[in-house]
Image 1 (cartoon, rainbow, N blue to C red):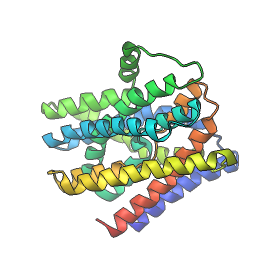
Image 2 (image 1 turned 180 degrees about the horizontal axis):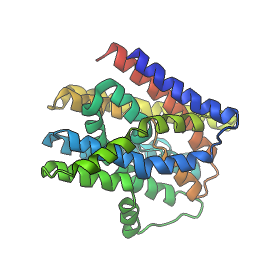
Image 3 (image 1 turned 60 degrees about the vertical axis):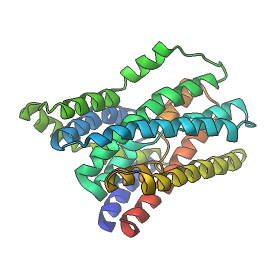
Image 4 (image 1 turned 120 degrees about the horizontal axis):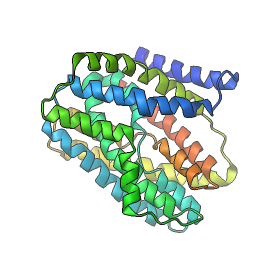
Length: 300
């Protein structure tokens, strides 16, 4: 397991070095991220759901994750009620979890295909948090104070290729509908690129420059996010009546980094705190990687 984590860190480090030596730049990450979210990640989801038998209890995972996201947003509004409008909106946009880019490579190293199946269902709930709650509040607390219609949110969800792939693939699995072997073989070949591309992308986006005025809000947010995730995750691990992998998924999933889409939303809504969002994203990647390393080596 230590060797697997070493490989992961080396690939992330390679991405960072490619940026430092100007072989690749952060703007190249936009192209890589599109390839991941629109091609390799959907292919991985198709292969994962095709090759495993999904327990019906996994249907509860997205609902648990979404309810947790709703609670997080409500508490976040209360904890950061005295903060400036844009800062409050920034923290609300960070409500989701980075599953597809960050978690999948590490989860596969720890639990294999069974882990990917569980975290794929976890990511379905995350998608509704990211493209629903986070997007709505990010829009509302922007300078323009945009007001989105329900139809706009549905369109946003409908345009999420990973989310639509999750829904279609899981529906096919539950109904025992098999896709052609040729299609699965092609998808399997494409999906093999998902993990290295995701890790390289994480390296490209690593940046830890923190502006002094943001140090206190960042520490406050990190304390809030990980304390809440740890408290709820541990409680659910001991009290949920489901199998161990299900409970591991909840406990670990609630401690994952913030969703990568938060930075995209910050740019879309013209937030002046875009650098803050990027910094928190990077810090949570490091914190969550340490948590997963400890979990993989000393807990399971």
